[in-house]
Length: 180
Ligand SMILES: [Zn+2]
Image (cartoon, rainbow, N blue to C red; front, side):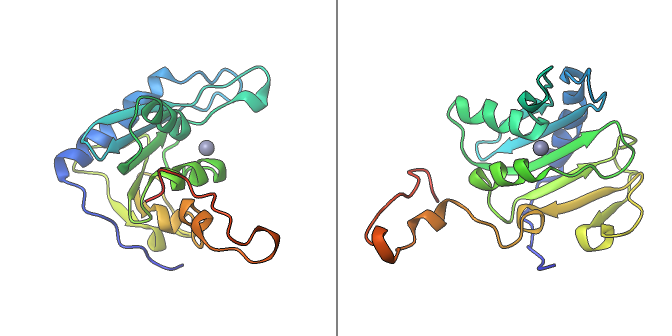
């Protein structure tokens, strides 16, 4: 695993981010999986945006907590984020799924810290592991701190669409307006 150094996160922001991810579970609509997930994003403007998973009788219509938070923020004009916390009712690491990782990659820097919070979290008491320490080890009762780059290595993102092509589409430009 290639380590991605995390951008700094102020202790007060970290505390609030974790608390809001935990409370975001209360909005979860998960009658099918009975697996509540809560997430909270910190925006580059210092706002906190909560999200929870919302399921559907047509299972494919479900959306995860992380994407709920992204969609809420982006739909009101916020497109840049600086930290994410994710939690569930499991007393161990629950990590963003593959689809969420790609959607987060659209709007978040690779160095963005991602905090995976156990249900038993207690401020100032719960130990912390980095991704390398967490890999293959016990994560019950542990905060796992990782980054977007660690969650989605060798990723495809908006800037890839800026690259020049060869072949029939040489000279084409399809870059996203919002690409950093
Ligand atoms: Zn997901």
